[in-house]
Structures are given as structure tokens and as C-alpha cells.
Image 1: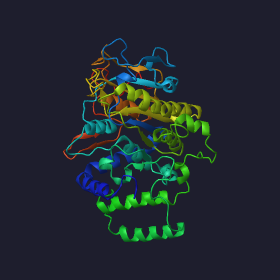
Image 2: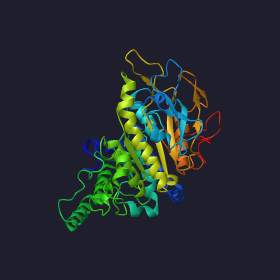
Image 3: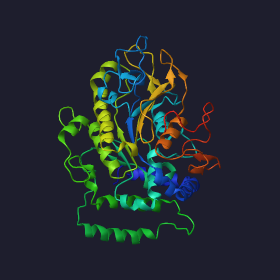
Image 4: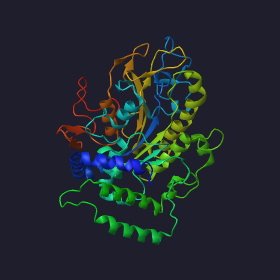
Length: 449
């Protein structure tokens, strides 16, 4: 009925909710106490997700002259001294507002585990189901007294398929999936008049209200509560007067979206694609108050024929969508309130294999960030001449997540960030328990103003 919240998804989360009720409620209590402060500083996040493991040595950290360098050439960007692939000229023009982390070791070279760690900032745990960053931001937005004005639109929206769910936070904060950007989401058009829909909602509340467990001191996570919250979330969108935000014909103020702009994104005309449409939709959604939008571009698992595939398929699509998104956000004055993160499962091997491709490689690869409190035109960290190891400012996933939260206006230090204890009593923090051993910081200070 509601994006990723189908019957199987619901039952899985209901079971998880019962197992982790205590840490989930502790997390809620801590965040609720700090909601006014969080909302005052918090910005929106757009995640550009490259499913399959992007070859960052061929995009952001090129090695011309090395046997590992490949067939493509580097190109100067708008930021002095920074070069990226020649096949992304639009993105290159936006590098005064983008920065590269070139020294990430994300530990996980398996697709599922790499996807999990990059979406949550945590390695998988057998005892606690961590939420994705989109679900955390959705949760925080919901706690703000002003959030009621945006309650009719989901706070976490995934365009093209969600990667990781809401974990112990529960179904209410699961991503809402838009499979076909530009078209109305499935199952949000009511078959009956709005007044009948409202009456049906009232009957549902009377029937299910008695099944939900209540407490005078704190809410209780149970299956009935999860089902009720999912239903209410779906109903809000069905009766919303703002659900037209999902079309790509008009802006949220009712003005017609310029056809040339849609073509720049790759959302219309020759070569139009769902990634381009998703990037344009993401810009509209953050303007409408959505806390996090994830836009997916798959096809990066290139174990053979990588250079032709990059040049003819993925890079032109990425360049139009990402480059125009950054340009559009900047021109509309939204970049200061929107953090953009480009990332995937892991990087790919510097060594080119016998099939002309690259294999999985999490030890030394790149993530790109921009907007919000991020300083533009910065390269942080470096790899050696062959791209096999980080030689300058080695970076881990905690550093990356601390930086993202800081860029969103959320202090990631344990003294101030929302914490929770797992089922064994161990503390959990949204962006790490300890600072980086070498820098002594919870975020990359070279990247965040």
C-alpha cells in the first residue's frame, strides 16, 4: 500500500520492533528532548545512490600514467587544482560547491553489507537493526512542533527503490518509494470522495485504537501500532492537496517547469531517464520540506567492459542529473539548506581485470559531498600513485557520517547527539562513539564550515 511497506515488509518490521522496543524508545526519548534545537539547525539531504559499486578511480580520483589509470582522461573543474573525468563536464562546472573525499576505507566489499554500511554509517549487527540516515532525519523532522504542516508528505522518499529501511525506528519512518518519477505514486489516488475517505479513517481509528498498547509515560512499539501508523501515513498522502508535488510539469508554486530545464536534467527529450527525472523531483521535494530524498542510479557493477559502459551509459546520465541538480539548487538559493551526497556500495579495484573491468574494492575510494555547511572546491585525503591505498588522511565511514550530520546542522559528538543503548546495554550514537584517532574530531573539519 505504501511504498516499501508491503505485507512482508510490515511483518518483518513488526517482529524487529518487538525485539528492540527498549533501544527504539530510548532513542525516541533522547531525540524528542532535543527536537527544537535539531529543527532549528537541520537541513534537507539528497543522496545520489550509485548501486553496484561505482568505479571512483575512473571518476573522481583518476591516475593518468598509471597502469591502473584506464582509458579516460582527467578534466579540470571550476575548482582550481581539482580534476575529474572528462565525461562529466556539467558536474565539473559545479565544483565550487562540491568536494571530494578520496581516502575512504568502508571495510565491506559485499554488495548487501556495503549498501548497509553506506546507508547507515554502521556495520550490520546481529542484535540491533540500525536505521538509514533518511529514517533518522525523518524521525527528527517528525518531532518538531512545526512538522505538522509537512505531515501530508512523507519525510523520507526514495526514488527508484530504497536501499535500507528504518530499523528499530519502526515503520512510520520507513522510506516511501517512488518507482516512476514524474508519475503519481502508486495507490495514492482515492477511489471514493474525500469525505468518505475521512469517514473510513475515523472508523479505522475506532477499530484499531483499542488494539494499540498505550503507556502514560512512553509509547509502546507493537504490531498494531506499526500498522496504524503506516495506515495514517498513507491516508495523509491520499487526501493531501499537495500530492501534485510528485509531477514534473509544475513547480510547487504552480508555475510551469521550463522544458529546457527538464532536458538539462535528462528528465525530458532525447535520452530522458528516471535518474534525471529523480534529480528534478528531489529538488522539488526538498523545497516542499522533505527531510531526505534518495535517488538511485544502478548499473555500476562493471566486472567487464567498464570503459565503454561508463562513457556511453552511466556517466552521461549521471552528469546531466547531478550537474543540473547542483546548478539548479544554487540558482534557486536552496543549496545552503540542502546537503547532496554522492556514494555507492564501495569502489572498484585499481587493477583492471582480464575482462576489461574492475572488481569490488572498499579499501580506497571516493565519496562526493556538497551543499549545506560543506565547503566547496576541497579535496580531502589522497591515494597512492596506483590508487591502491589511502596515503593522506585515511577516512572511515564514521568520519563520513559525522561530516554529513555536521553539514546538516546536527552536532555528531556523543555529548550532544541523540544516543541509544542496544539490547546488551551498549551505547549507540548516530555518527560514532569516538573521534578519529588521528584528528581528534568527529567530523572532517577541512570540509565543514
